[in-house]
Length: 467
Figure 1 (tube, helix red, strand yellow):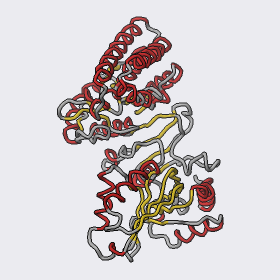
Figure 2: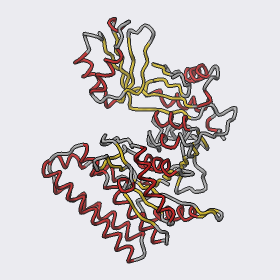
Figure 3: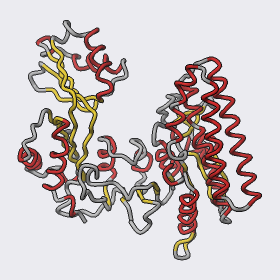
């Protein structure tokens, strides 16, 4: 079970976690083993990220104010949640010790006014390191046996790609299994920090934003768990963004491949790589709302019920994007042209979200995050403009609309239905891309047309009435 920061930051919310763990520990006379994975308290990781500017300026006074605020927030949470005085005192000592360590590291970095990817990962780990003992002692306060561990302690070993580390699964499986299984046999609920691992040199690494999901599925794969629950403050994956479509519905179930498409195209609530560890072993993943236990949430599994009318699952909109078109006669029939263009962009840390090239080979259209547009234009102008490419045009303020559904595969007329629906709303489609898997069809429209396109498609495919 992974608990997000939104269900950890108040005493009443922690009480929900205790009730969930207690109820799942024994279901209809069947005893279950539980592993808890916890995020930092809501907003803490973002606040730690904002410290980088203060560190670079060497502003130790502002850093001290920040750390003092962190101390107050976490200590207050302990005092409000843990009623047993002895346990409360012990939890305070642990948390205050971690905060003192945090202060020392920040002071050291501020002293040299420098922060590296490795040191950034180290300071980002403190959000989870502070929440884990609080959850652990809250469980103990309710007479549940519990111990807390960092991802490093529990045995998650990664590469050294700080900020977006990937687990070395064979090594991780050996270490995690050896650590966790004896604890479960003793009836202990391990509380593990999400988001955090360690490379082979013992340096703390992080798995990327929302990495606690990834931690949960890594551990589940290692110990061959029956199910993974991602607890947050949302009921599940939706048929559309509710800020665009008021009657968007929660999906009862969805396949791993559909969920992967939704996540890669910007659906929130799951780490983009969190599905990988549990897909092969087909461990069901459930997204549940800790504040709405009567709602079953969304189940992600290979074994979904097939119906004739559920071939489209979700309409996803990706905003804040721009379209970049490069072309020139020199590109035609020239092997390696695309490789040169994409290599130039990759070296400047520009991620391409969508690509389209016609058979004439005279141009390539790319959609990228609007924030990367400046870097992309500068790098292409400096290296390729006037040589390989003759012209470069930009269309800002566009959106990607993606239709996702496993049942689209092999069904005739889906594309026609999609574009007819959009045309009825007088929306012009600028660019189209569909892979041979037929799991999704993506197209680009002006941002001002995005909401109308999504609403039209949601209505066209009857997603508000899905069962």
